[in-house]
Each structure stands twice: as structure tokens, then as C-alpha cells.
Image (cartoon, rainbow, N blue to C red; front, side, top):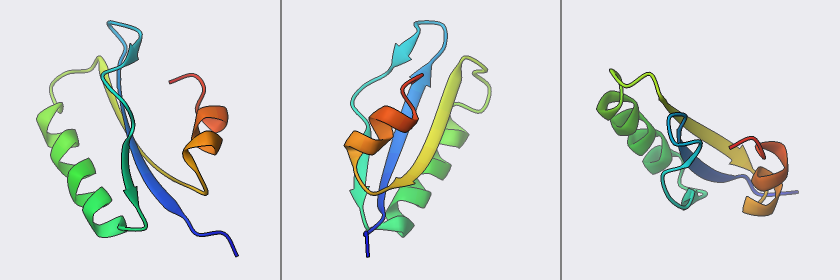
Length: 69
């Protein structure tokens, strides 16, 4: 069985790219969700920002499934 890894992407639409490398949380879903919530609050008023929490088997898969980011 594949273990789910957690990643957060922060995408700035005004610049057309990620603000940095994906944040990796491994299997720690609680920490990933807590950080996701913090980022959502931080960028709440900035409609150019997308904060995306993804569960996947690997970062390589995220790069394929979320290539638009």
C-alpha cells in the first residue's frame, strides 16, 4: 500500500509561478493542515494567491498532477 505524503503549494497568479519550493510534510497531516490554515489566513485578502494542500504518493506525482502550478 502506498503511503500518502502531504505537500503545500503557494502559487502567486500575479507572478505566474510558485513562491518557492513545495512545502513537504511527509505523513504528518496535522502539521500540514495547521500550516495550510496559517497560509490561508495570511493570504486571505490577496486574491492573486492560491494555497493548495495535496495528498500524494510523491512529489514527482504532484509535479504531474498539478503541473499548472
